[in-house]
Image (tube, rainbow, N blue to C red; front, top):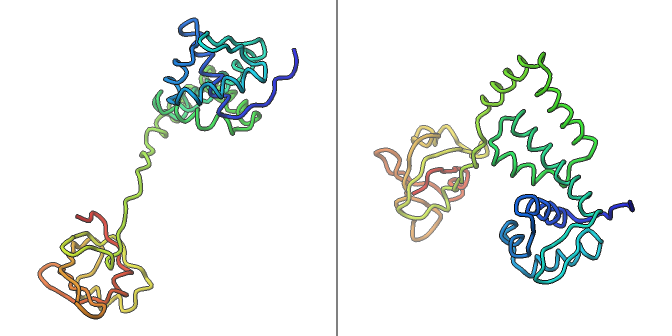
Length: 230
C-alpha cells in the first residue's frame, strides 16, 4: 500500500468522525458530519474535497462518504491514538469518560508517537498486571485527592472601582509605600470596603472601611486589588 499522505489535525478529526459514523450507522453523510463536529456545511464540503484529493475517501455530493483503503488505514491509526489516550486519562488519571474524551481530542494531534506508545504501554501494564493492583489503588487515591483546578478569580484595582460598588481586599502590593499606615486604617486583606465617592478635583477617593471613611489617593489605590466586587 502506498504511503498515507500527511494531513492537518482538522482533517484527522473528519477522518475519525467518518470512521465512527460508519461503524455506528453503516454510513456517513455530510449532514451527520456537520452535526457531529458542530461545523457548517461549507466547511464539511471543503474538508471532504481535501480528503478526496488525497485519495483517503470517495466523495460525491448527496452520497454517503466512503473510506478508501488508505483512508481506512489512516482512520484506524487516528482512532487507536485517541482510544489509547482516553484509556490513560480515564483509567490512570481517573478523569470522567467525557473529560478523558475531550482531553484526548486536544492532545492526540500533537503528541509524539513514541510518547503515545509508551503511555499506552504503561496503561496496559498497570491495568493488566495482577501485581500492580496495589499500585492502581494508590494511584486512584492519589488522583482523586488532587482538587480540580478552578478558574482564577477576577481581581479589580481599587482605583478603577465604580462609585457605590463594594469589594473585599484580596491583595495589597508590596510596592505600596506606607503599608503599615494603611494597615492601621483597616486596609488589610479580607476586609470589605466601599467606594463612596471621588473628589471633584484632585486624585482622592473616599473609601468606607468598616465604620470609618478615609481618603485615599488614586495612585495608592492602584496597588490594592479587590475580589467579589458588587
